[in-house]
Length: 146
Image (cartoon, rainbow, N blue to C red; front, side):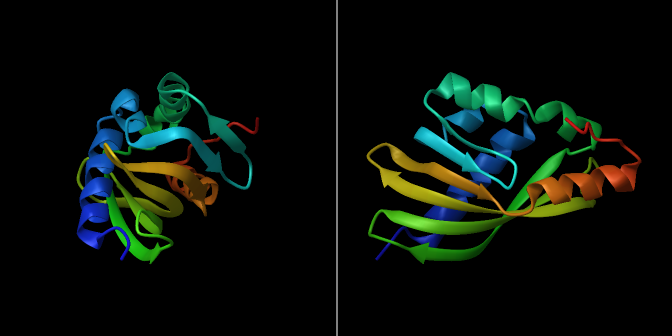
């Protein structure tokens, strides 16, 4: 019952590859539409792949400044809500060019097994803003207050 763990692991490994390559268009294809992102500071639904790619790419300049060169997903918890919908907690480990850990952050995803494959429909950022602040402080990078 539910989406098999191995499929979710494979899915998030491919998602990580697209993120590592800073490929917003490829990353956006892992999302179903509309896709919703919720954090402590933001809530929004994105209706198109173009909007999703624009939203995703907006974080790339900061990620590059912080030295993010790799990203490794670790599935921390999977809850099958139905046969085709699972709630998945992923811990993302952001690595530098030497594969040294910069920072980790957790995200909860609502994933559905659509006819054309797995898709993310909701992402809830658990501690991403805090993780970015920690990484910036460790590197002496000042984050914009806006």
